[in-house]
Image 1: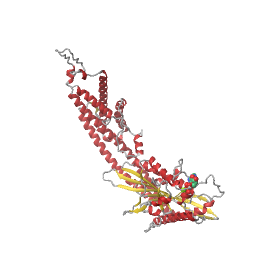
Image 2: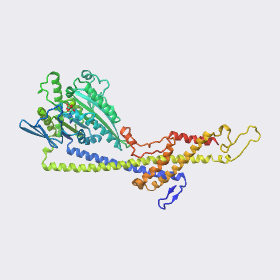
Image 3: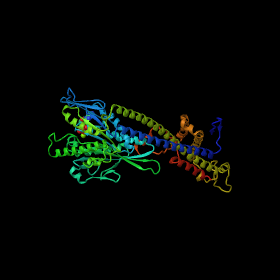
Length: 607
Ligand code: ADP
Ligand code: MG
C-alpha cells in the first residue's frame, strides 16, 4: 500500500515490479548523495589539514615545552624555592642571580598527565595527516622524563595516550583506511637494541650488539633500520601489549633500572599507513617517534669513572648532536649535521623541514639541582632561539597571536562541519544498505509469488474426493494431501511446521508491504528523506518492527554490512547502540533460507 503524497489517499501498488522500480530509484538517489557527501568531506578534510599545518607552523614547527617535577614525598621542600614560573616562562633564582627562560608552554608542578597530553594532541593529528613527528623528553635523571612518556597504570603517560588517540582518530576517518605498525629500540653507547624482537628479550648488550641493526637511507631520504622488528598493531589493546613488552625488555636488561636506563635513549616508533578509499589512491606513510632520552646530567662533574663515564660521554655527545640539529632546523640553515650520532641519523627524516618536533624539557624543583636545571634550560634555549616570541617586537607578537586565534576559529568551524557531514554520511550509508537489502527481499518475494502461481492447479485437485474403484487397499486421499501416496502425505507435525512457515511468510509479506509503503513515501522526496528526522524514524521502525517478530521466532538477527575497517574501535562503533541497527532478516540468514527452501520443496513435492 502506498500513500499518495499529494492527495493523502491510500493506493494499492500495481505490482511488486513497480515497488522494485521505486526502490531502485531510491537506491540510486542515495548512492548519489553518498558520493556527494564523500567529496564534500574530502575537501573539508583537506582544508582542516591545511589550517592545522598553518597553526603549527605559525606557532613554530619545533615547539619546546617545560615541565617542572613536583617535590616527592621523600624530598625536603626549601623555604625559598629556586624555581618559579609563569604560563610561558621559568625563572631560576640562585646565589643572588636571576635567569629567565621562555617556552611555548610551561607545565607547573600541579599539571596532570591529561594537561600535558592536551598540548601534544594537535601534533598527533599532523602525524595522521602525513607528517613525521618527534616527541622528545629531555632532562636530568630523576626529573620525570619516563613519568611523562610512560606514566603509571593509574596515570598513563604520553605514549599510551597518543597511541589510543591515533586509533580513535583513525576510526573516525571515513575517507581513508589507516593502519599502524610499531617498533621499539634502545640506543646505548652507539649500539642499537631491538626491544620487540622475541630472540633478544633476554640477551645482554654484548650479545645484542652482534645482531647489528643498520640505519639505511633510501633515495627519497626516508630512514629505515634494517633488521628492526616492526609489529602490526590492529587495535589499541594489542599496541599497548607490545608497548609494555618493549618497556619490560628495556628494564630487565639492566641490573639497576633507575640508574642505568638513564644512560640510554629509548625510542618508540609508530608508523602510520594512510590510504584514500578512492580507487588508485596512494598509501601515505608517516612516523611518530616518542623518545625518552638519556639523562642530560654532566657526568664529568659528578666524578664518574670508567664505564659510567663512557656512557655519560656517549649520551652527552648524542644530546649535543641533537641540539645542533634542532638549532640548525630552527635557523632554517641549509646544512643540518646528522652524522654525529646514531640518534640523529635515525631521526634524520623526522627532524626535517616537513616534520614537527616537540621537545619536553624536564626540570627538578630542588635547590641541589639548580646547576643541572640551568644547563637543561640553556640547551633548549638554543632550540627556541630564533622563532620564539623573545625575538619579536610587541607588535609582531600581537599580530602572530591574532593570526593563531583566527586560524583556531577556522579550525573549529571546519572540524564542526566535518563532524556534521560525517554524521550525515553515516546515516545515508545505513539507509542505503537497508534499502539494498529491502530490494533483495522484495525481489525474492516476487520470485516466490511466481512460484506460488505456478503450483496453484493443485488447489483444484484438493477438492476431489477420488477413490480407486478396483482395489481392496484403499488409498486415503485427504483434503490436504491431494493425489499423493500415503508416505507422501503430511503428518501432524509436518502440517504444523508447514502452517508455521506459511504464517512466517505471510508475516514477512505483510512487513514487506509496509516497508514498501514507507519506502515509496521516502523515495518520492529524496531531500525530505534525509532532512526530516521523523521520516527516518518512521522508515526505520517500519523496517525493524515486523522483522523483529520474525527474528524472535527463531531466526538470527543480522547487523547491516557496512564499510568497516578491521579495527577494534570501529567494531565498537558498529556495536554502538546509538547507531541505527537493523534486525532485518536477509537472504544471507541461513535459517530463513533453509525455511524458505523447505517450504518451496514441500509445495513442489505436492505437484
Ligand atoms: P627520569 O625518567 O627523568 O629519570 P622519572 O620519570 O623516573 O625520571 O621520575 C623520577 C620520580 O619522580 C619517579 O618516582 C616519578 O614517579 C616521579 N615523578 C616524576 N614526575 C612526576 C610528576 N609530574 N608527578 C608525580 N611524580 C612524578
Ligand atoms: Mg627515566
